[in-house]
Length: 336
Image 1 (cartoon, rainbow, N blue to C red):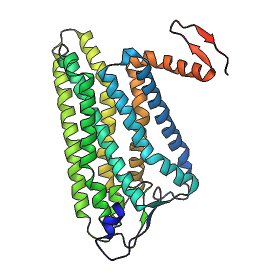
Image 2 (image 1 turned 45 degrees about the vertical axis):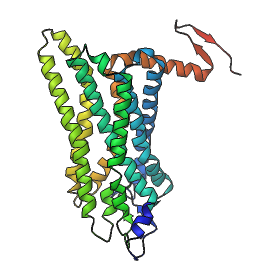
Image 3 (image 1 turned 135 degrees about the vertical axis):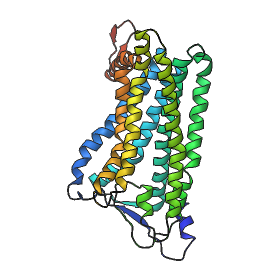
């Protein structure tokens, strides 16, 4: 679909595929990066699957706050899977070529999942705001129905608003160069190869970033400002500490997520001097948060910290052919 749009605009021959060159400046030894990247990707998958299993198995975690965490785990797995298999195939098997439609689909997927991550962080901030500032109304406002509706809203919001990004990219004319100095299909990296004007692409991507990320960041800051104001009014230091502790891991992950985006934007302007930095940051931004988020929540959220080891034990017993009982008695059941 994407290829036909661009091809219809000109009789100039279109390139049939793009070539992902990998990490700029280190092509001769970039394959050594495959091990840490593969470990990060594996960690992201395993940790997020464990979070999902823990929330599913433990009835005490069947609460809106943990439902949002489950959605975040799914988004994290989707974000890392969008890019890592392709990068690892390039580093391990020299699979550098990528078709135009596949490249434009990857652009679309990356934008959706990054936008969803930002949107779910906003949902979690709203959840904490209502829980701390309006605790008596929390059960009637933040319901399972609310979680479902706001999650679907975020999916449709990002899914629809970012459609023009790959469509505009595919509408460009790629008549000569096809080597992308990157290890994934970034919108700016791909459209820089176009033979015609790409100003519309840059303007629209900047506008979408401001509309989606800008509004999310603004509402997150507002939510935590109101939470801080409410906490400062508490007379009990213990109550204030408990209220802030429920938000600490969330704040840390939000700061990391958006700080890297800002640094990426700044370093992109200096890409000509140090081309490796923005490419490396782009890749790490799509794989470190998915690996870090579940670990941070598991360590700093008491309910998950207490129940996750039990889920690991149940899974281990299942794989070993044993049965786990709630009274901690293990009954041996031979395989077969």
